[in-house]
Image 1: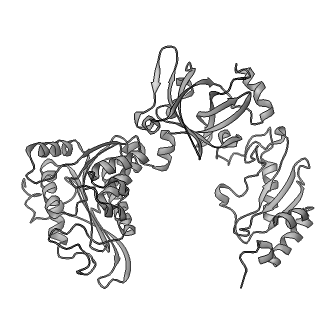
Image 2 (image 1 turned 180 degrees about the vertical axis):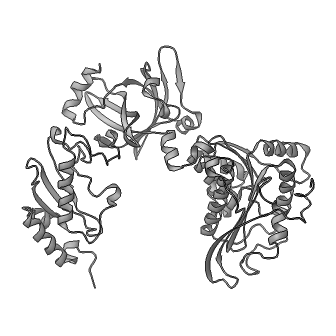
Image 3 (image 1 turned 90 degrees about the vertical axis):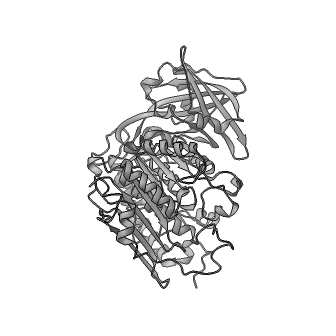
Length: 550
């Protein structure tokens, strides 16, 4: 049996011998001290195409699953114009996340990759035309470990030209065992003060407030510490001998594709004349939309979601992360500790309306989403005010989503939606979480929820067999049985149906059918039987709601 506590070169001696022979044939020598003292395989040599580039091949313990790291420590004027980390000297071989590396490659392929980078990216040359990947300067600074700052909206989306003239900022700082974390709270010029979006600013309500300067520059600061002070002098920042000072440097940096630039923030902390860089993370629409390809189309959409239980809460959270700009949550129920088994909010919310807890959770992951939580009843005699509040929210919504799993509620909402010609999506889970059904009504394009019941009501998907142990005693059974993994799938499918419905009026996303989605994880006997079907939900002649005006 292989002893996995041994380093790779002892576990795989034949592989080590192969690598050693290849590297020695290329003029590299094994670093014996590193092997004996650190148990790390390193080969030291030089580039053959440009002798001024020393090369170190350092093998990780995960080799051959992971490629050797290639390091070339050179003077600043020899740093390659791309794919060469100025601080560590690491060459970025084999693409993003080592996508081109294969476990059957040898040292020779690694050597060829490193030499190709040296040929293609000389310090003063232009990158090859095919290389459209940006090389952001911001990732290469020598940052103070553990300290970070947030650049919240609207600052993260502001262009260099918009920031011209702003010279002063207020920071909020919290220091703890993890380091210093802070947020840019406001910026100002001689006439205006711009404040951070309140949702973000409230995260640091108990923080220390300090002043900082802002410098807008056309070129990024130098990466080398010995050149920094002379560069600071050139932009009017003199050596500071005081206890502590803070300065934001804002410069254009590449992002997205080569040649595209956006304003990038970095924070300089100076203590008794010693300068330290602190990493800043900007919250901006670029990063959001590159991860949610429909974000631009969804930002102004309004969704009304009824039901904030295990399924509804996850649907709401998913919709917010997809980029939905406005979500109204309706549920009269209060949170119980046991809900946390399948619910995305924690047990600390016990006794509080579920919609309030879900709203808070959404604000944590998507602070720019507008959430209106209403702890009200639907369709029951609880007062005229709640009825009018629900109707107003429904009229304002682009899509109504029902995740209550309550047939009376679904019938009630469906009757209103068909009357007002409002799009409706109904998501439900069978007992045991064995299957999910998502049905939608698109006025003029599909049948309604009653049509679906008439067409498919006799062919229910499989659910867990009835058992006396499934529910708590009593007539009002509090929940259904089903694991959180099944609810995650159900929520994702419901969310996708909602997004597709919202995009249905957009020409490039317009759909022609598929208004009933059913997913099953098991068959009637409980055997694994994964299947997803997308079926039609045609207008049924027997439906009185859909045919009322025919």
